[in-house]
Image 1 (cartoon, rainbow, N blue to C red):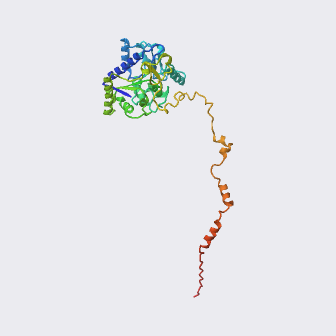
Image 2 (cartoon, rainbow, N blue to C red; image 1 turned 180 degrees about the vertical axis):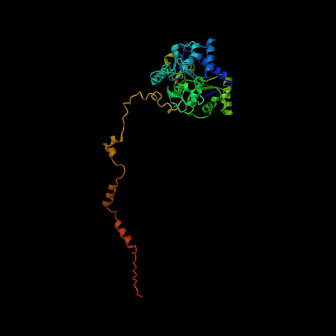
Image 3 (cartoon, rainbow, N blue to C red; image 1 turned 135 degrees about the horizontal axis):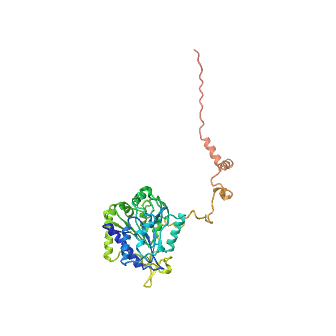
Length: 395
């Protein structure tokens, strides 16, 4: 994991925007091989979007061959509502750049079948070849997208109930207060984010300091879903100084020293060739595990395959749509009652007390046992009974 620390929110946003521009330009996307970008909403990425628009207008980057997937959307909020994430993205980014409308993907919180909407969204991501770079922000409780504390780290795009802390934090965007904030949302899952080739998170302000500390200095914990980035091969967190208030001094110095050495050596982020330049068009979806450089095969990260434990990657595709699937034909229900007719299962495994008693009654005595018993009786002295007669004497 890389932690990039800048003095203020403006510098942190500038770093993230410049990095995204460099990644897009180095990837050199084309109509048949687009750069797939995951995008967040909220207050944290606003500065990044403003700088991206400026760089587009300056001719430093084009989004013509960029495909985007947004992280989340409120449920039942009209699409044209001022606080819908659809309105947010077009207000801050899409209306100001040259991205084709068909390349923009946003979750529909008013879909008639929300479960089908979530499954279709995952399918669209896979059809696009996976996400090359997922930009993310976090909440004060450490949630990434709308994966609130307690969310499964193997989760996929789904319906999610928002916590009171999230509703309270988002109420500042709604003039009517808490009652106007939607209570549910559609969101990509933690595993959906981890499947991206690269994840970049921007963390700004002292209110996010505790969440950053939980992610950097403590272990993976589903109560702080941002900490799942520890399982990703290429995560990068960019923050301002205020966001480091809960970190230990030695932690801050450690990451600053790493960045200083990296810059002195002339590199910013070490990424496999396949991730930096993208695979060939004919293997865009398959994403082969090796590339050929100067005639030699060079190993790379097979994306989108996150470095997570086998427990977290047990069944990401089948974990969510369980209700829509019929039982497998290979599954045979097993009841204890079905085993009664099987002799192997009716045979008693423990000794039968009645049979044991019968064996004791009819068993022949061990040879010499009666003789030994007789000798032992002869040697045993018989008890002496003393009888005392008491005669009554009259007065």
